[in-house]
Amino acid sequence: MESLALAVAIIVAPAMFGGPIALLITLWNPTNMSRFRKIFVYTLATLSLIVGCFLIFENVSPGARNVGILGMATGLFSIWRVRKFASRN
Image 1 (cartoon, rainbow, N blue to C red):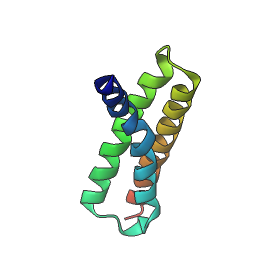
Image 2: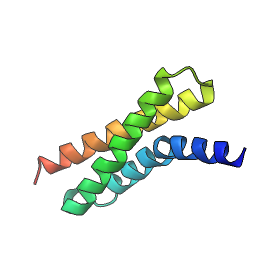
Image 3: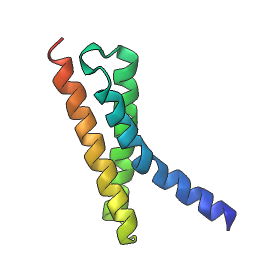
């Protein structure tokens, strides 16, 4: 049973934490974003989008679907913020 809980935690963690962390990174000093920060945001946001899509379209509980929606929304918004501020530089 512990391995099942570990597998679920590994599947849900990118959507639950990846998108919000990527968004927080873009909120801190967005006009002076280094190349490393951009790559890190893109990586977290992409993982969040992939896992979020999986959680939304699979037949899972409503709570997992909400986590997927949260992950997708924050991932998309963080990518939009990186693109928006990258075009100003």
